[in-house]
Length: 138
Image (cartoon, rainbow, N blue to C red; front, top):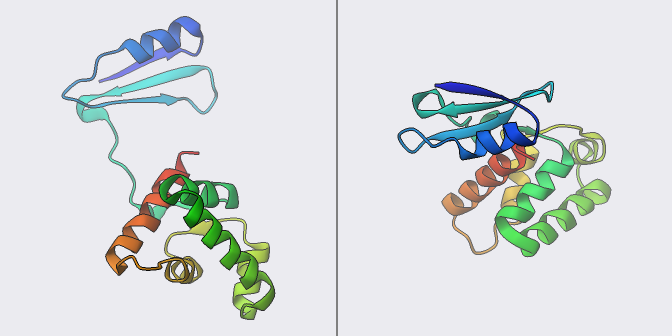
């Protein structure tokens, strides 16, 4: 079931107070900003896989910060800044001039490996996937 509310104080209150159906509920603001859509039950869209995410630099670094805290953010930021000056020509172009960063880009995997530390490969992959999933909603 999908319910539509106006994007005003009463509409937001009604959307937030709408009970979940089968434990599922997602509140989405329409692109035009005039309406609030509330997806309930089986109408809640499945989450997109991290591999389909495209993030800008703000979303990427904010996602890394929210998932791994200050240590992950600092390590990633320092590595990226270093690649801008001492990296390969491809890395320099990617990190200096890139606008969108995709989870499947080889440079993102290089970043993941550079900041992996003592974490296992599986944990490191899951952490980067979570950073992209989190960054997508910012």
